[in-house]
Amino acid sequence: MAQLGVNIDHVATVRQARRTYEPDPVWAAALAELGGADGITLHLREDRRHIQDRDLRLLRETVTVKLNLEMACAEPVCRIALEVKPDQVTLVPENRQEVTTEGGLDLTTCRDRAAETIRKLKEAGIVVSLFLDPDEGQIALGKELGADAVELHTGCYALAKVGKARDAELVKLTKAGKVIVAAGLTLHAGHGLNYQNARAVADIPHMSELNIGHSIVARAIMVGFQTAVREMRDLIA
Ligand code: PXP
Image 1 (cartoon, rainbow, N blue to C red):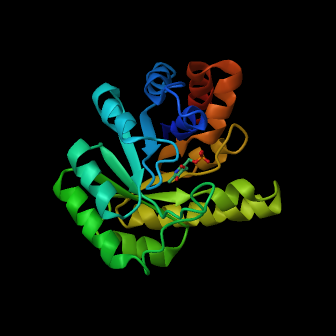
Image 2: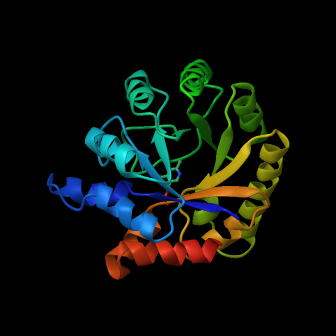
């Protein structure tokens, strides 16, 4: 059964809109746990547009489920990860202009930086997942560089029109999932998943973890955080 990692970045986005102290992502993480979250995910971006260093440090002390830190392959944030020691790091590409992460890592262009980052994190006992497009070459390279898991980027699936186009994207994800599992890596997925499209991805054989943020935070505004997480947990179970 796929586990649910609740991404709380957009709780911090609302806070940063006013540079104030509320809503606090630390509170949201506690409510997510009460709603059945298996993990809490956060992205410490270089530009600190939502999650702040203080959030990561407090969450490390308060979260009792898996703490998954998304970050770029960059020295300053890697130093913070090695200090705070999340349970898992998911390496993602980062571009200052983007509204959200726009695609998987391209390991062919950042191979050396990725290899160095993976090595340091693994030496510190941190599980390393790579956010990749459903591309066999990238998955093979991820394996070669020593990753433990691959999080498949589901953005194209989420954006595809319901019907043939979406079905084709699901086939791509399923095939890539097989390659990931055959390589001995753990299979994760995320990006753009919501209450309409997450179930089919959760049903991909050997799916171990889904990371979902925006749709849960959006629903939480209407029904409350704990309820929004519980509804998603029940849906993908
Ligand atoms: N997984 C990764 C690697 C991401 O970068 C993000 C967005 O921060 C998510 C999952 C969650 O995406 P969404 O907010 O669209 O659910």
